[in-house]
Image 1: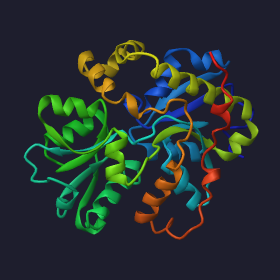
Image 2 (image 1 turned 180 degrees about the horizontal axis):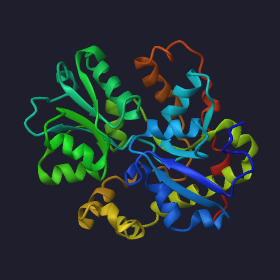
Image 3 (image 1 turned 135 degrees about the vertical axis):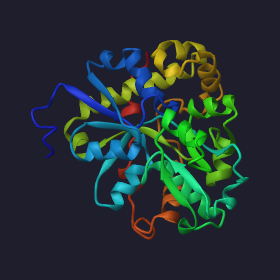
Amino acid sequence: MSPAWAGDSPTISIMVGGISKFIYLPVKLADQLGYFKDEKLQVELLSQPSGVDAENELLSGSVQAVAGAYDHTIDLQSKGKEVCSIATFLQVPGEVEVVSKGSPMKSMADAKGKTLGVTGLGSSTDFLTRYMALKSGIAMQQYSTLPVGADNSFIAAVQQRRIDAGMTTEPTVSRLLAKGDASVMVDMRTVEGTQKALGGIYPFTGLYVDAGWLASHKQQAAGLAHAIARTMAYIHSHSADEIADQMPKDYYGGDKALYVQALKSTLSMYTPDGKMPAGGPENVLHVLAAINPAIKGKHIDLSRTYTNAYVAAAPAH
């Protein structure tokens, strides 16, 4: 048993793979709205620039939960580690492959000899980049991958021409487009764009915990899931302006109007109720198996990678 669980600390630490990103907005919004407190939970939100770093914090026992990408649960099971997603934020990745101004790239088929930016090596942006390149006939050895983080560090990499193209999320995408520093090449902010890029729906971020912690902390897990389910209902019953008003002002990047506009264009990516969408896990496994030899041909029990039990039991407010 991890030392982090010993003595049952009253505080649940959640590591977020980039707390100001829209793909993790539900966990910060739940905190801002006081929904964790309503569940009698003391929650601490921490942030790492990349989801793969957040995953490592969970495995070391430093945190009790991660707001990260669902695909890590499958990747970890292939390595003999059991983590389980208890609430799903996004039914699509919300990720965008942007092309730096002046780059000759028009599609992923042009990636040969180019440098592609990802948040971190082994991160979900890395997985998706490799899959889209492979689908376009470009092998991993034919391009370079550079970890450039998110937000300002990603923008700097684009502006300094250190990457030809790269994968990032809102509100970073809108900030780049507004300044004319980049253009959209692959858009996975919508169901249509995701199906075109990845061949189906692709549940992306959510809240996952270690299976051992889950088995002995069902009440806390239920509280976390209930707070997220309630937050998803809030997102779908309030305007982008109202949601933005609940968020910390430093998340706006100095431009609240741009933040609201970016949020408005991406509200459809959030799940209505925090549940894992049907068929989603199978497509995520299909994508990962195509790029990861450790997963291809290995039996992955998808039923152990997520549960809808806790969000389904959320009381109506």
